[in-house]
Length: 274
Length: 266
Image (cartoon, rainbow over all chains, first blue to last red; front, side):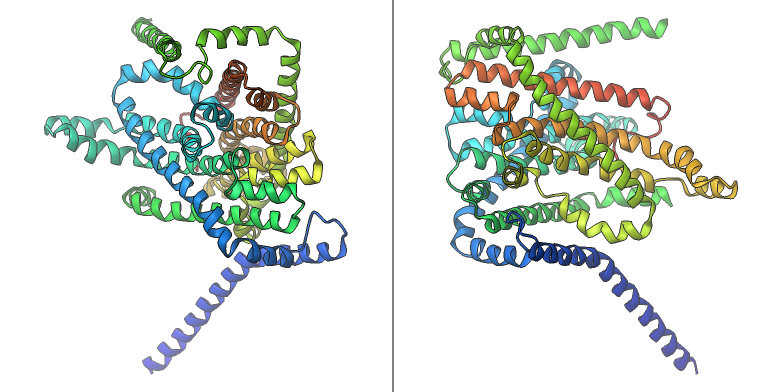
């Protein structure tokens, strides 16, 4: 008898789960699907050539980006982006930790940092072109110069806000400087560092695109601007779509990394909330 | 009084150190071309740049360009904020909408706004509307996301209390939702103001509608390094001003709240 009820209970639970999955599916894909249909219908009935239908764009996407263009334009762009992000994180965290640890250094540099952070990063593209010429180094330098500020400033704040009880405990246990940095200061600052990295990522992506629109003969940004100048509308849209995909992938990757790095932190917050 | 007397030497020290840092930077900048580390054609003397800056500030054409930039900045920021507040409140308050729009928001938000520049040029040509499209798109998401978070953050006990006291929908909006969401909203607007300025200048550089950004691009193509550096300094000061003003507004409007919730929201 128990087996029978259990089977029924199982089945209804299974059905409820199935319904929830279906609902989640519907919720997450319903609106995008609806919007695509509306777009498709609108594009077939209108004569505006600037807005081709989704199928045309998809076709253009396949023809434009899958093939040699992926190796010639997309990969170099992504390579520069990755290089720029990596350099920003290294420079931002190292300098931020140093500045955050010493109060006099912080006070010495604060007005300068505020000023440099306030410069709109794309403005530095012409400056970097003067200093470094039209090279890959210049593009990476532009990315670093834009993306490093949120990381740097958040690291400074994070290092400063190390829990005072913990640092006093560390003092009384006489841990070495390196241990202190590695086991106390950096973990304490890591939630803020990750916030900074997230802000830095979107700046880096923007700068990757603009630096290529300005001074390049290859790369994603250059391609999109080229398509626009030559009135290749569907191809241009496919480029925008590709950039959107890169942005989404970047955000998703960051989400995974952040969850891993900050697992302990989210755990503590969960416990505190409960 | 006692507290004041302690605090003053510290803040004096802070100002002094800040001035030392700034002066040090200017001296290093001056020394680099003087010592020939970098050709002064590429990195001009700081004295020349500052002189040019003073010259620009007396020039009416400069102020007109600044006016163009700040106009598109202000229009873009206002439109984006209004749209984001209205849509964010509606979406944030209705769970059905929040779930249904999640995917679309998560896909549209990371699209770098500059990717839309070619589209904007095609549709609007070299005009301010093209720049506005970019500015609004970028700053909209900053505010929208914060408003959604803020509206969803209403304390459940407070909400139930309000309901059992029979507050009307409008009363609940103004006494419950607004005060909860305001800190989030102010953070969003402050971030959006900075982003809008960046994109206003970027759009002028790339699209070529009149403003500071186009002037920067023109100085570059004319090989006028001094003018270019002077304009970069101007944009930095402008960004600094925008940051300071919005931080001040934020602190002013949240004086009752700042201690409760920090800026860490996202």
